[in-house]
Image 1 (cartoon, helix red, strand yellow):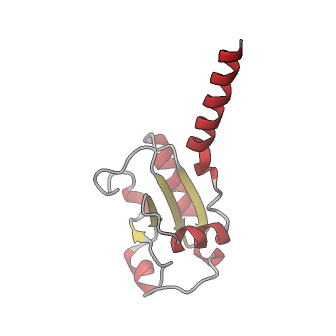
Image 2 (spheres, rainbow, N blue to C red):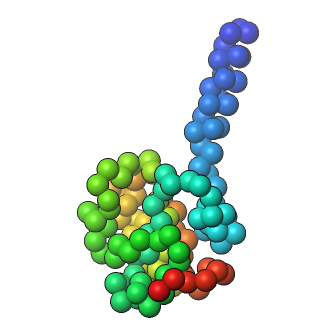
Length: 123
């Protein structure tokens, strides 16, 4: 019984660490902290058009239009890799998020519209 309890507790701790990616990056403050961190194990996608991206985008984002997902993801993108999407209003990022989830990606978050970002934009 003791061994079972210890095993259960150990598995709870391990799965708790594995599920640590439950951070809500829809929150602008959490997203800002992620972008300023040393982490590089995520994709941050601007799913607007090339012209919209060129007019101003959130730093560290890469432009992959929503209607090219999931085919246009960088080669080697893992199904459990953190992928965060945004667009102008939240509509296209929602469509892109659903496309990635349908394709089997399990760690996808929709930041929504760029207007939620409180920091500077890059051009």
